[in-house]
Length: 113
Length: 113
Image (cartoon, rainbow over all chains, first blue to last red):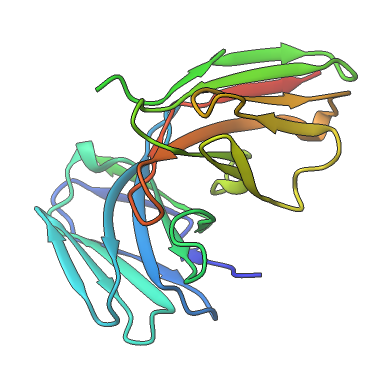
């Protein structure tokens, strides 16, 4: 069973600060995805990383896939209230593609204006 | 783009009753997925379809759960003899191909009293 642990579980910071969220596993994933979920809605895909060591940027968000493809991080620069939400990482295993994602436990982020 | 549609959005039922949820995927997507999300957790994979064929089922999907996608378009998830532990958000997602991104609906929140 592949498990993904996210840390921290909760994070509350002031607007304008930087933060990093971590997603760790003992399993190797063929790709790793990051989603953001708002209350009462389904998760929305932010990014997919595929190659070990890969770094992707999405405006103020920087995503990195670990060299061994077991972990990932999400860094947000100059956080804004609109960044508030539940951030989920999800790993795909080679034989299944995106068909059987393993989701992490989530990081609930609150940005205080 | 109408997105993935799920109905109903909320369902409250008494223990022992049967419930059925519906998911309408994005029209050109041939893959459809069901996930369950309990409070404070990430989504957990339940099952997925490629067209009308159900290709994978999680151990979480007990005999009381059945999913169908009879014409390869919409899908239904039925829970028989509901238990309080079935209370959760049931999320549906669809994708165009095996490695294509998943598009989630906004879920059906089930409360079993």
